[in-house]
Image (cartoon, rainbow, N blue to C red; front, side, top):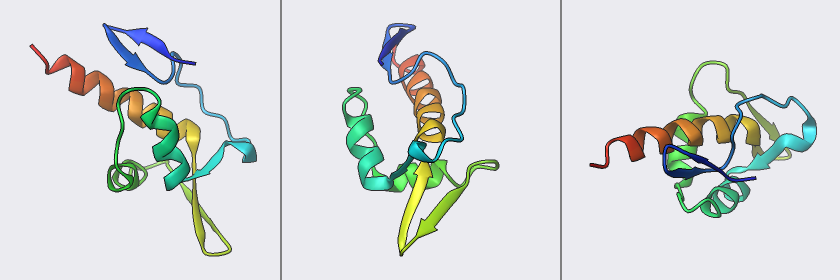
Length: 87
């Protein structure tokens, strides 16, 4: 669900974390999902976001998975910062 925040389209309107295992996505999947918001980000940027304290990654069968909720929270903060800098 997209929400309008200060004139910027962001992926979420709340920042509630979901610990559910269905919340896990790969960086590639996260990139595709966030691109739908109109504010695409690179996998490198997402990896940097996930290095913040409290954000964990899970490696299963050689593939790294991250919490999509954590990505959404980081993305919302990034979009808010990026759009507030625009005159």
